[in-house]
Image (cartoon, rainbow, N blue to C red):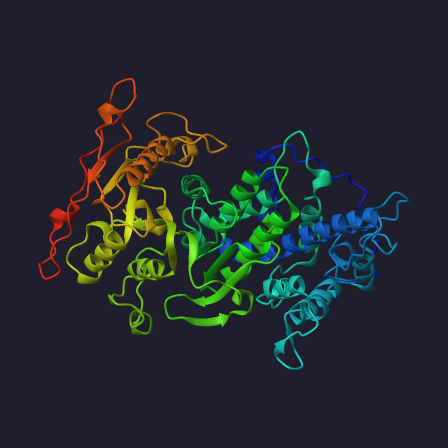
Length: 545
């Protein structure tokens, strides 16, 4: 008979983001020696384990809050399917934590351990996972579970891709469970504030590391934060990502909007953000549940995500997207670089091409609401390629229907996982007015490496989104958009004027800037004329500091 398993070692406090990273790495190291060699194997495995751990902690807090208020609380999971039953460490000590129904935490795990080797695997594979799957789809009818709550359906959908435990050694699995159990608010030193969602962010970074196939689904978080700060979405505006990957844009936008509301936010405002604000689509079977888990762990209780191909319009799972609007106020996205689409996708667009990113731009132009704003990561093909009509016509449609007000040239190496030599830009545009003038903000001179990553400061943002200087991106755009607004009021009914100003007119010490300049956008060529590169010549090379 197996020896009784006890756990008396107190967990160490996680006191900084650095120790958090080391802690996550230690878990990944155990998984790498347990049949999960690459990030694309251990990230999905650790995703569902971490998700169930944090879900249990969240429900425990909600139950305590309900008890204080004298309200009823119905947990999404009951015994023995809760983390506190089957995954938490067990101890026979008198001060060992108890479950909500009065048993010692880890009682089911200890029962399985005492029954012999392999019983934990059997419980997870044959009992736990089928139960969680059934929260989404009833196995008897193969239809949506009619009695499941929205939260239970999301849990079931997150778990649907997990068919069995990938870890191949039960001792290693118990080690992983013990380490993950230490990740709780109780064990995070409150003098170093960071949210539990950062644990998951650190895990997703593993997918974005160089030489990881998962990099195609991951956008560097500082690039996302710069884009979100620049667009600055607010309550009442819907936010959408048509190829959301792991959900990074939506998660960062949610945090940004919650921070803007402040501590005095009404509960109805928070509920609106959690349920009716964020929408996304994702094609990959591997990544869709990871995105769902990421958004739930960030606080978006009911993510409105659609599983399927945005370009072919074919859905794999659309139940969570039923109440999405036809158009969106804010679109934040990073379409795949260099993808090739078939005729089933191309036929849905006016300008047919196999280039994935060009089709996504056309899709975005249709789904962006009038007055809505988009921030998008694009390679330079759309801007400067003139030998394919779909590129030229899509660019013309963009600049005819939208005010393309800023282009940020990113340094090489930011998207190294996309392939060597891919040059990328951030484009910002607002639908409903033709392009007259473009701010070009050059960061191509920045040397990016593992020890010198791109930061918010490179874009001119402080950690809270404030402008760091007069020649920084937020200061330039704020002043410029204010000038546009004033000019619109003064020139109502008149032709839209051009406000291309020289940097010497700005209040910078040198009268110049290493960051940016304006480009007057020339009138579009007649539609019957052959497109030429003169309409999109590159701005002059930036002067290095």
